Image (tube, rainbow, N blue to C red; front, side, top):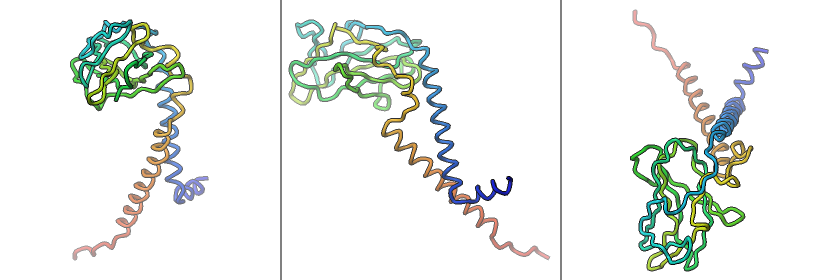
Length: 220
């Protein structure tokens, strides 16, 4: 048995198989962590738009309607430490024109500035709801850019019921979501083990050459 394992390890397929096996095990463990982490999510909660700090957003004279007064309107909500959020969603209408960009910035620590390194873009649910899925980990503050207009354009956004919803039940990850990679994650799951196997194979060959290097004769 030992000789068979040694022969298998010396084969060309040994390193790729080991790297892909490690990647698969790591992905399953990550999926388990995601499911366990989602057990403590805060219940669904509707937050009135008025609870946000509105920057360059003016009431539009209709229920739940706000008009962007600059090219970078913002809705900021701080003091979220201690709440486990996974999704932020709202059901919008745009009576004037479609916005140029809609993204959600988040911070992990109080007083941390917002940056492009921590932002997510929405997906559209079947009912038209815009859904932002936040990463695992603490969330301290949110900044929603709901309707950035194009140059010279005016955009009005109307929020259904004049509210933003945290952890809407229909938007939360399902049981297998943590285990099923999307296209981008699948790409890296296929590429990274292959690159790691190639690097390890090169290192193994370099070590073998170093061990077989000619040794200088010992001094008399």
